Image 1 (cartoon, protein in one colour):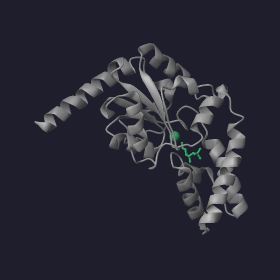
Image 2 (cartoon, protein in one colour):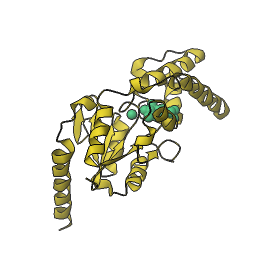
Image 3 (spheres, protein in one colour):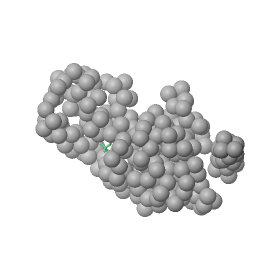
Image 4 (cartoon, helix red, strand yellow):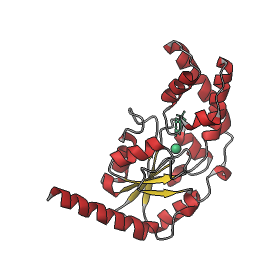
Length: 232
Ligand code: BG6
Ligand code: MG
């Protein structure tokens, strides 16, 4: 099936790195003298590193110079790297490897569309780097999700029109980005939080067998028909 392609977010879809981001951000907040909770951490999901720091400093009501912020971004990432360089394939989230196998069997290409500048390293750590037809990460974009840039570059790498791309995302900003890009959005996680997605699953083990061969094909057909109707 080379008429459709898949774009995967990384953190929270393929691997659970949120816990490592949390530990590194919490360490930074501890050093600055304020509390940073797991609930606060939810606000940073899908958000770029720079924006994450701004949100964190707002939580602590801390104002810093640009130079100091640069230093903190470097030390946070150093801390985070300490965790991710210990990751291995056992940290691939349930259902992810099987889903990639299904896509391989169906001949559906997939690329990565992540806000993380560490995405290539993480994929190497869990032995998945070689499997992706392309990588779009935090180094290749100038605008963060919900801007659709990351996914539109992904569509180019797949040589597909946006409406034929399916995005797997765990963050609201990511689902919004996919919708703005005119792609099919699949929300992975809490359906209430990700209610703007076209389809919702708690995790990747829930994707039905006929999802790509039937459900997605029908959805694309329907979308195309309604577009045709609108232009008439
Ligand atoms: C996203 C994560 O995938 O990447 C965010 O959901 C993170 O929490 C962002 O801030 C940037 O990651 P990194 O690895 O470049 O600091
Ligand atoms: Mg994510």
